[in-house]
Image 1 (cartoon, rainbow, N blue to C red):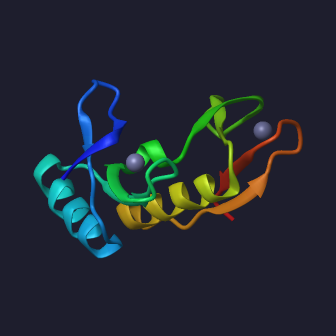
Image 2 (spheres, rainbow, N blue to C red; image 1 turned 135 degrees about the horizontal axis):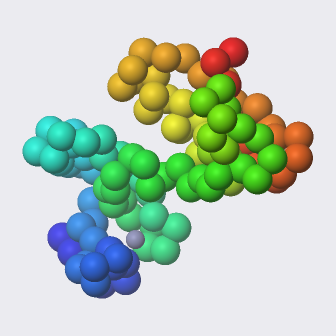
Length: 114
Ligand SMILES: [Zn+2]
Ligand SMILES: [Zn+2]
C-alpha cells in the first residue's frame, strides 16, 4: 500500500506496512535485493510502518571538536538512540562492538571501541 501522507525525497509515496512484522519482512527482502541494510521503523507522521536504508535512521554530522584515531572528525549522533542503532548496525555488519558516550564539547553522542 502506498502512503497518502508520506513521501520519499524523490517524491514517490512511501510504502506503508500495517504491522511491524510485515515491515521487517519487507526490509529483509529489500536488503537482500539491494545489498544494503534496510530497517523497519514506525512513522511519526502516519503511525504506520515504513522501511528505509538503515543509515538514515542514525542522523549524524562531523563533530567540530573531536577527532578519531585517523585524524578525521568523529561522527556526532544527534540522539543516543541513533548512536546505539548505528553501533548495532556496525556490530551486525563487522562484528565490532562499540559503546555510546556523550560528547564532552558538543550536544550529541559518539561511538567508541570501549
Ligand atoms: Zn508515514
Ligand atoms: Zn565530540
